Length: 252
Image 1 (spheres, rainbow, N blue to C red):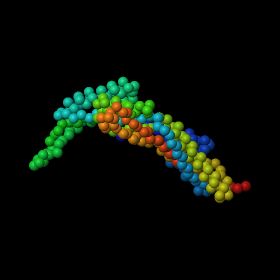
Image 2 (image 1 turned 90 degrees about the horizontal axis):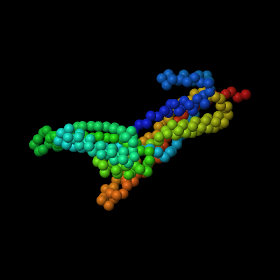
Image 3 (image 1 turned 180 degrees about the horizontal axis):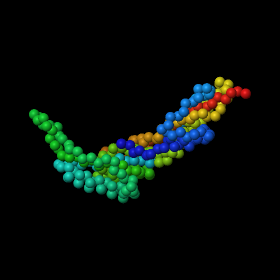
Image 4 (image 1 turned 180 degrees about the vertical axis):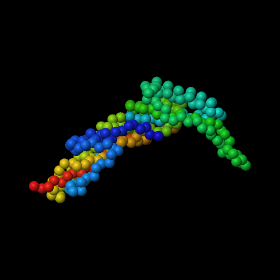
């Protein structure tokens, strides 16, 4: 159910680690990394970086569900209600391109069988139309939810928050991981009374930021109908792990 924004952790890793492994040939992802020469003495270290950032975009998963005696009637009712929801959102300033259909389903709905009957009875057909609304003004999320519900949306599947500039956050997490791995290597070399050489190999795993669901408190009483639904965005956390292998140079 999550909206997935393309991430490029391998691309970021290649840019950052190329400065560490000077002159090394770039190895395609499909080609296994050549083994380290066992005759070369090395130090292998790992580092982890973590960056927390406030989200700057949200995705509202809104749905309209309708039930009618036949599929045609259910579909027509659903289309009319969804058009009202979309019209309300566009009137509020949301561009049509930021409202995307995520799922559309038509299926029969049955009532439990009556006593002494084995077959369930067909109640009708249910139509579900789910759209995802991209919002960049987080202060408006609550009011947009209220407007969509007032216009005819009868299901809010999820409200998710994310980062529009994932690359910058991932890059910072990776830089932190490299710095910590290098510091560990220096501490180890000093403790072992050896001298660090060049980076012989480097690898990384970058975790993309996750879209965390928001805490939504819907107004349920008549006195609260005029209030805006409060939304509290969750802070985003991005992690990166790096492994560095240093050559141990002979002491002179």
